[in-house]
Amino acid sequence: MPFTIESIREHFPVLHQEVHGKPLIYLDNAATTQKPKQVLEALNSYYANDNANIHRGAHALADRATRKYENTRTMVGDFINAKEEAEIIFTKGTTESINLVASTFGRKFIQKGDEVIISTMEHHSNIVPWQMLCEANGAVLRVIPISESGEIIFDEFEKLLSPRTKLVSIVHASNSLGTINPVKAIINRAHAVGAKVLLDGAQSTSHLEIDVQDLDCDFLAFSAHKLYGPTGLGVLYGKREILEQMPPYQGGGEMIKEVTFAKTTYNEIPFKFEAGTPNIADVIAFGEALNFISGLTKPLIKAHEDSLLAYAVELTSKIKGFIPIGTAKEKVSVLSFNINGMHPFDVGVMLDAKGIAVRTGHHCTQPLMQRFGIEGTVRASFAVYNTKSEVEKFAESVERIAKIKNK
Amino acid sequence: MSTIQEVQDEIISEFEILGDDKESTIYYIMELGDGLPEFPEAERVDENIIKGCQSKVWLTAHEVDGRVIFEADSNTDITKGLISLLVRVLSGRKPMEISNADLYFIDKIGMGNIIGSQRSNGLASMIKQMKFYALAFQAKQNA
Image 1 (cartoon, each protein chain N blue to C red):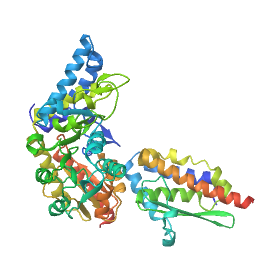
Image 2: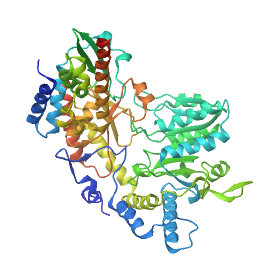
Image 3: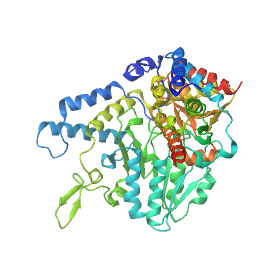
């Protein structure tokens, strides 16, 4: 596939439309990315040709569906360089992946008085499951503070570490700020006190090359729909030796080895954690999303997105009343901001009137908003199919809106 | 004083002039908000916040000579503009007129399309609260 943005855009039917009489400029990619034709076709083709329940079916369709489903598992393993595909568990999304770890690893290995460390910039999905766990078992939640630029204060993180630390659960790239955290160093220090590390990769996996063996993270959670894949599907990567020690998450079909009324034994990983009929069609279609990404290659995707972000920062920095939120040195393509004297919601609605889709509000990171003393932000986030001219239109529109209150 | 219906029809014809252009409609709504009387600082308390709105909306109601006077404010300009429309239609009327009012102008001016479905729920909460106040005053008058 040649890397011209026009040819890439051709793969995304949804981008070719008008909203409110203006060409759609989709800058809400951190919420969800659009889906290329290959993914849509795979979904359709699965139901049109292959639909069958997977595993244990003694017929051709079941066999075909199983092979395709398991093929995506292998692809996901390759995508993050897992040692083996058995370390890849399919879930509903990042949120469920984190909840799975909290409910299984958490219940078994985190006891009263033990500590879980998160950071100020976590998404609610990496806060609430740990609060629930701590409430249930008397463990303690510790929070790494961040600087004004939206970066973790590493010294403070180190101070929080102790033999009581059982888990560090941290976001790889912040959904609200774009900050890329120094996760390798975090993992290193956490392991030194014997703690495990879960990475929330919801925002990082679509931009950064991920090598779980090199990072040495114990868990990685991410969602397909932020990776040009379908909604309702996520991944939990975990190291084999840890997954094997964890109790099952949900009980039901698929996750068992043998059931008698006296006792049930459980299946091997990853099936132990995939009770019930999984999201077969979406898993198979996700394989096409991964093909799409690997066809372009991550370094090219990131280079393009970085240049869009840099251009957006350059153009918006000249706007009177423009207040960027999150100015870390290392960022994924997220531009969060406020306009002096204006509510983010008003800015978002006015951008929508120009055909520009952004997200406004607290972005499910209320403690982070409290840290900055704001109610919310306007967030523009760029993906591989966005163009320089879209960034220009976005900046022009923001400038016009800002002028209302900043003459 | 014009009737509730007359004021609604007035608003509908104002919005008809703006046509389908969402941008000018929004700018117009924001300007309408500027026309709302200053909200008393002492009333800007949690008890006066309407639940169910994404942005903050404060609403108070007082009875003056058998009529309900609404005062309202919001921390977002678009919401403030929308409230100003409700105040224009409903404030200064008898409780029974308010509780019986059919607010057809909201659909007619295409509010759902302008503010989105989630915010429309907030608007519905605002109307519910205004009617609730009216019913309370009505009950008091009948007592």
